[in-house]
Length: 423
Image (cartoon, rainbow, N blue to C red; front, side):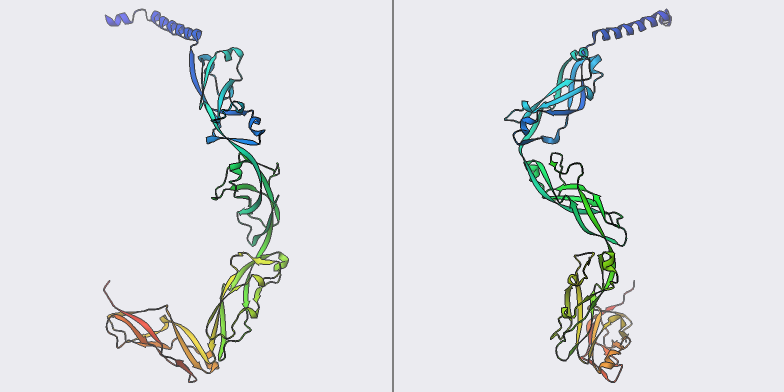
């Protein structure tokens, strides 16, 4: 029975429902009630800047505010179509409060008909004011230094570099101009092998080495910007050569020298490097007069580079030269401890050596015999008298390779004996 009532006159009921919906839509459109909407990130337009700039001052918007949100009140049919292009937010510096440096924000409409504009009743901006800072405007000149990025083509290094212009003038708020510690032109040398004039990116650094924002600064570069003249030089690996002219103390002789590094990287033009195979250090640089022992000499090789040639790494100009000075008829041989034969080691012990791993042995005799002396398999130690763990000074026995040569002193070596233990 109940179901029968719901199913009676279905068509009439549907018609009544549709009519009610249409009537409600018409009522809403006819009434067009006042609503609100928020348009976000509307740009701020600053006007009447000359109020500040004509007095030799400049302004800065604090907190970097560049846009605001605007709440618009008006008829729903109009505000529902609004976007940021229809709103103009203005900060008029002529209305700035002298004591607080607050600038009120005002809103106007564009792109709407007069009737549509009349339907807008109110605006609210967030924030309502701009906070600005007023400073003296100053100008300063700065030299431009150069930094490079990237790696040149193999076999080439960067030579001389100059900027165009050599200095730059910056104008702007006093606090920001005075914060500039250095101005750098950053240029890429990636893959370069020939001289070029390269455009550069200008970077400003403060006293803490941080890159600065230069948006509030003006400069005198114009549209051309800054460029860097980059010279490319060839690189070459050459050996070093030393000689000694002075003589050591009486009874001593220079028996040789070694140096570190033995080769260096230099660079220059193709012509400057042509035929260059070594860098010779003059004999008078190595002072051996009166020397009676090994000498360590640090030599700056920069003065001995040919004209037009320089080091690839100019901080690596020092070479450590070790000159061996010995008595006449005396030869010192450095023997690695691993080459010493070990005899009569107890079965339950194992051996290791203390010290730096080198045993110095001094021989005397005829120089001709000393020069050809070979003791690589001539040294040994006897551990038959050492049967317990411990650290011992053990005499080294060296077989004399020639009757005309004898060992000076009685060499000893520190031996460390430890008990073998199962793994």
